[in-house]
Image (cartoon, rainbow, N blue to C red; front, side, top):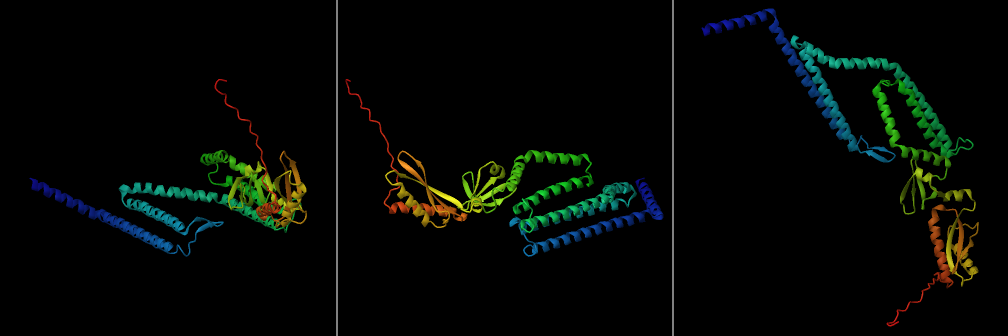
Amino acid sequence: MDDIELETGAEAAEQVVEAAIHDGKLLGYTEKFGIAAAVMAGQALLIWLVWLIFKKISSKIKADAGSRIRPLTIKNYKILSAKQIVNVILFLLRILKYLITIFQLFITFPIIFSLYPATEKLASTIFGYILHPLKNILMDTVKFIPNLITIIIILLIAKYVLRGLKFFANQIAKGKLVFPGFYAEWAWPTFNILRVFLYAFTIAVIYPNLPGSESQAFRGVSVFVGIIFSLGSSSAIGNLIAGLVITYMRPFRIGDRIKIKELTGFVVEKSPFVVRIRNIKNEYITFPNLMVLNSEVINYNTSVEEEEEGLLLHAKITMGYDVPWRQVHEILLAAAAKTPNVEERPEPFVLQTSLNDFYAEYEVNVAIKQIEKFQLTYSLLYQNIQDGFTGAGISMIASHYYTRPPERQKPKKGD
């Protein structure tokens, strides 16, 4: 009985196969399977070629790291070394390689699924995930072309306006173009201010032409950036405005010797936010512009440039009344005459500034014009004063007197 059922089943299977061959369905499935296998093999070969190409490109970049790839520097400041740039390029190439591989795999399965009726709809759905975004991007790009042309025209106008401003600033800074009341040192700061306003105006004009500028997300990001900027930059804005005020006040220039808050040095940097000076010990001191604006600033160079007599250095000494004041004057004037860097006009002079209980106070004044030798001149003047009094046999030690109350005697026993 079982043998009869097996024979019957085998005959039925043979009939189904013969019917499929007769209808061409079995041959169609075989051909589709072969096509699917060929597609997969071709994609595997393409993926292998892509990885091989990227491997050769990476090897070529590593080999050229020391010769063609240079460090990224801005104003002598190294931002990225050649090795770091190579690592960034290799990282980006690796990401691009993986993206291409994922895209190849992503389009392989829909092609295979489209060969069979049962999975044909699934293939259409997967293809839709790819084609619909690409179609939307293409349509949005075509619609954006007029706005893109407008943006390009605005950028070109801004570019040539900026070039014109830079040309005028350069001519004014070199003294070739002169405007009454406008100093040459104002040229580049004014150019930087106008450049910022030009950038802001350009962004404001371009903004409505950007894709998605009317969306709520775009507006939300703009509001968020504005809030962060307003909350986190109050001190920075204050220093920036103070820097502009300092620029147009002209209290000092680069290279001037100035004094700020008991600190003296030469100005080496004057940026929109800070002022940096270097003292005689080559120590660099940085002051925020807001503090400089609210502090008293002494400029020694201005005294030299605007006054024909130069800068007056003064040294104070005290001397007891047992030394005649005329002799003190002679010694101080002789010390001033021996000091290098001292100008002959005006001649050194001595002032008697006070009469105290035990001594008189004298002040010798000399004029100099070499500001860079400011500290050295002071030191040599003090040395000559000391040598003058020592040579005259006069001690510079001021006498001090103390009064001590009488000691209280201890009471005796029985008192």
